[in-house]
Length: 406
Image 1 (cartoon, rainbow, N blue to C red):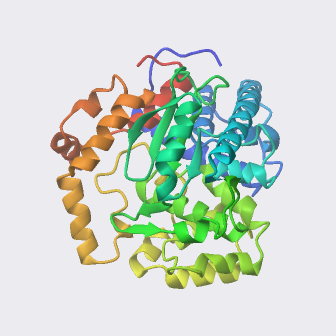
Image 2: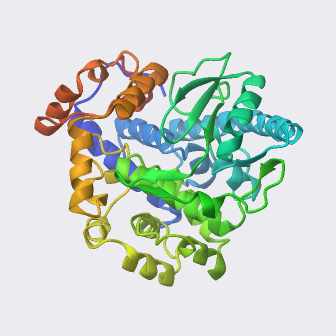
């Protein structure tokens, strides 16, 4: 699509993102197979491209969308080719990691996207992977960190969830969507856990194999993989960063699940956090989640979170919701104590939160050069409370889709 010259009014962008997000979710989930081509303007089609890229589903839409609009088809086809070529690089890197881990005699788990490809839920080119996620035992993390460095990587930053390694050579490719030449990052985890919104839910014991072997390991069961996908998606719902791709992952894996696999979700602590995600999957992917699983998860969900999540939409809990929220995820608090802890963190971030923000500003292409991120925490919070503040990550993708200047 040829570039435009200016950014439209934010209210227009907000409405277009909402319309495109819900339409693409329906198109991908085949709620309306063979649906009529939307009567969208050129701007709306551009915003649809931004949504497809931000939600990681452009390659899938190339296979499954029935909409025959030439610039749209060209964009989807191009994205699929980039993802397919990038997948070859990822597969080659996974083979090198496996060989190195076997030689070092350490077990490693390849998580999420790599695992979904390994069990055949996606074909090469279907699903983008921004990075390779690896889970290792705490006692092995330094050895695996050395192994990763020997593959040509350096530790870029460390946050509470993982360590991020980036290739010594190579730079991100600016532009809309996936690019075959973008660096493949490696995220090293020792635990699988999420803050929801301040208390930590940890499912590592469910996910890591009881008797791992040296080299790359698979999840012990489809139920373990589903538990991880659901918790990861719950963290994204809480943070308002869910992607349509997350829902598609869960809906596809659900087709492989047995009753025993679903029981894995309840093998540890009560998965009170699972219903908001399962409810969203069921909203767009009809009949994907067994009714008994939905009912059981709903009973385990805290009343207030259950109420808020009842009519939740993908737009509201993703980057498609253009406006930043002052208190995202507060409804996931399960007690007045958690609410108080949440508010303290929002009003006065600790040193860890500040370091994480600075690392994000330093390493994320879409944050660089943005005046919003240089404001003090107090000024950013006051702006959110008193004004409609647009999300920097969303505007980055929108500008790329429209060809508008920064």
